[in-house]
Length: 473
Ligand code: C5P
Image (cartoon, rainbow, N blue to C red; front, side, top):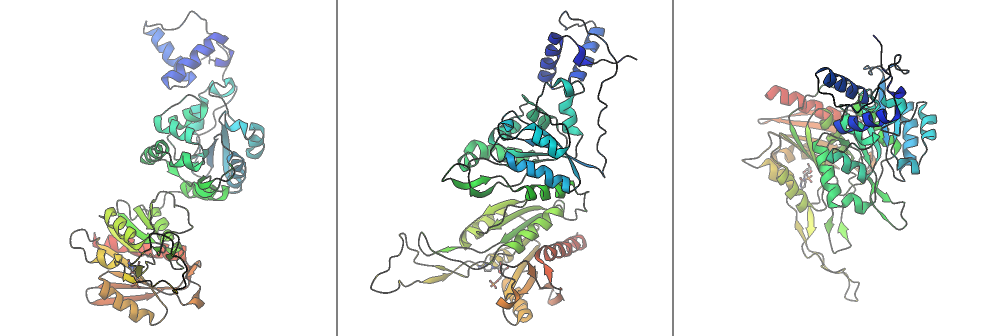
């Protein structure tokens, strides 16, 4: 049977085919099949043009990726951060991931197809109506013959097009035709990121199952501008890609809602000063990552920390203990609540509305009042109490005894107790030595774990939770 080479057709027939196929969201090849079908059914819609026949397509279709070969289609959007995407190609290739790049028209103002091609060792795609690739549905192949699509930088415009389902260029057509996971690395000016339209688009894209990494806070290319909007670093994006590409792990917490608090709280003294503590939030964030990886729907309420939002986790940033309590209450119901935050025990009762001044009268008196105890409040709920409530006990002496007393006093089910004496380096550090106390009626079991990284503690804790959930279901 003879095959058809679209690229050998008359120019005006090709133009007609491309426009018609783009309008109908089909590949040119599919469109030709539809037209032939219509002709045969006696409903000709073709303009008066002849189609020449020729031999088989010059380029054999690239095989659909298998589980061992990992392929990424990297869409580079038009933004100053595009230069980091060249480094991303390197980082992905280092991780044995093949990369095919698509550059939007705007991206080519910042990086050249030649650089992307040299780094990826692959042809680079730029045009929806590229005769060299569209003869066998280039945009469909780029959307499907990969394991993941990364958009970096994901500009405000590209995200708006995605949220709306536009397909008027190669990048947006690929994204609309995709049935693979999509990871966006947004990058834009902070005002654009915070604009109501972008907020709406981000929400819509998240609902559509699109994953995001960043943006980070920092300096902008525009002089004297800073804020949230910097594209994540290439290594961060590559790590997120590797996570997504990892073969499916068991998801013992699928369908479970997990609520986590993390970080310190800042209790204002006046508009510029606050009381804080040395918590880094690393342990709580690591638990959020582990719970999300176990399939849970995770909400992380965090005090001020210098950590990025973990992918796939709903992160709510708060300042004070009272904000944290309100956001925790609003996030209920949950199946499991883990209170890892180092909440300030006290706040200033007489918070100054203006900056306190040094006066000859000496230091202003600070009156402290007790903050609400979030763990105790949630543990003692009668209606919306999560079935499993876990607290942390950071102690500098009599660790186990204090932790046992805390379980009783606060009414939680488990306590993760850790020694935070300065010599341990736990506060702000990367490692932790913990004891897990579990209450079963009046009995309290104690398990002492070896020194581990905070990620390992998180993985172990989530495994314990999964076991308990399975036992009680
Ligand atoms: O009383 P203490 O601060 O040692 O208790 C630690 C545990 O209680 C941690 O789980 C912490 O997140 C939680 N907590 C809280 N609200 C407070 C104080 C502590 O949720 N105000």
